[in-house]
Image (cartoon, rainbow, N blue to C red; front, side, top):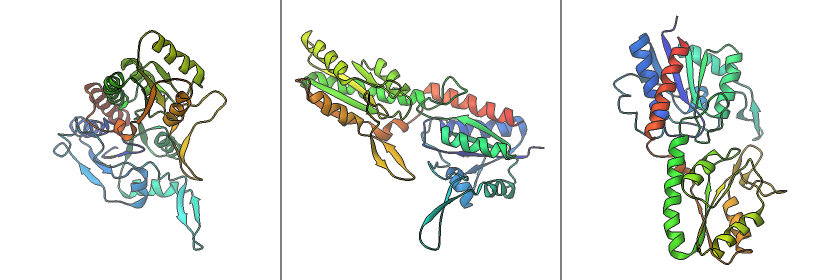
Length: 311
């Protein structure tokens, strides 16, 4: 019999996480009479034994429109590959997944709800196969998770990028420049595509389609020939030229971070067009801020559905 459930938020933050927490607590409490405990800092916090948060209707009532996550999130901390420092100073990655299951038992958590992206879902699935009672909620601004048409956080990110494009358009037009906006999108170009169309971009470069810089140059020259003295280009961070590779600003054994393709495209364009080129990297602002009404609704629906699946 279910009496107490846990919830954690993993991976990068996204608008709507707090709305999910609120929905889980309200549904679990009002419909089933269950206790809900929040696990801080994702799976990393679970393994570290961080103090948990007792969640109730009183302390989640104002979370619907709040950005971020009150539980914190961690991009790393897989129980299947946990860094453990050895006596000689080296780091060895060890499978401590059994400790995660033991911690859930110690906390008297009968079922766990996990909100996260592809990495978090992969961890949750493996723990499920080991016998844990887990329900996953699809969270990512990238909108690239299988099993759902849309993920919460995506709509807010698209709104943020679209607003940035609208502002860049006015300064591009004023100074007769080609403006490049680099946006998030490691393997999927949903943010760039949706926001690029909504924001009136003249070219959109996404990871799924290797780009030919001469095609982009030709498009800008055609605009110039028609009297347009500015242009807007959206570049997803994971985009790559035909025959080329994605660009990383950090690439080590245990960490890879894409970024900088906007500047690469800018340098390419500077060699084939006459307009002045400027590059803006939007960065983590795409993850922040209040969720849109659509993301609030979607996160609430997901949270309630997760509790009902546990039941």
